[in-house]
Length: 479
Image 1 (cartoon, one colour):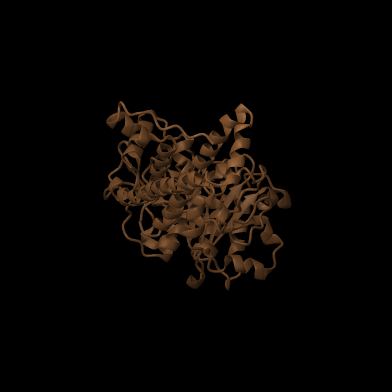
Image 2 (cartoon, one colour):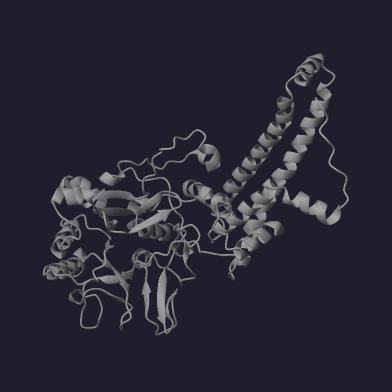
């Protein structure tokens, strides 16, 4: 474990931590945690609606659509008072001023939905907004604000997405941000500091009593996709289902998987907004009643995407849907992001020690099996059939005699590292159920452990430090 930590430190010093070696295991691990350690209990509580090319073609619209069209589509979500959503989140910011006089229609629609005449028909509305340097932390167009600088009939929420600086993937999700004299900072601020909540946190607080925020969320992506994926843009995807083949490292899986393999479908049911025009009321109500309805966009020129370690490139709305799903699944026991260079590193030590110990145990078992195989090999020398095979081998070309032992040794090296990787990934997935921290740093450390194993660093270091004049290793006896 000490060698692995040194490797990580060297990677940091060289600014090389983003190399494939350090994140290889983390990316391979994500689907396993998703299919084994993440229950689908909250998946069907969330519906994603997309403005997409299918919608633009079906309605003859161009992007951006008018405020009036937004208003009409939002009203359709609450048209049946017997099938009202639990909440609506609109992941489209209305901050840029444009010449569209239907802005008043959107303002009226938001008020009709959140503050109807009958309170039992009220549906909370969450509106995406960008940070402001004014009196309020978030802001949209003034026509949607009240005299106090707040959204008149909606709750403004932050939609900041900070991809991982090393690989660009969505491993974490910010829950809140606050403003100081130095600018915007992550997390809740001191009393009096302008602070805003993320979309997922604000929506989760409708349904859950959450304790104090303890740090950014270590986002767990689900894999077992919902059956309903109607958006035309998702026709070329395959449903995520549990598979034992994911235990095999991706480098080896590529030997039999097709190169044009389709990406996984999103975790949550995803529909095009245009499909509300063609679905029957029963189908529509099944996707809206008591659901968290999250509306986003996936249209050309609208650069709102997120890179999932499980699904690849997705419309940005899915990162908020997945974070909300984490809240609904774990409550205030959501997983917390941890790093080796932060105080949380002490919480990483125990799970890392367990996984590295298992990797080393497999190393010892492998050596034991190898010695047993070698003893059996020597025992075969007494059999006549083996003697005939050995004579044929000695009569083979020189290149064959040179390549055969090296090929066998290389094959054994691959098998050992594969077994160690599989055991580590299974154990990390199981540990994710026990510890309240994200396992990405643990996977990074184990990745470095496997690198050290592959390069035989420990043996070389031991020989260098304690056996500088050690005799050369015994040559493999001829066959």
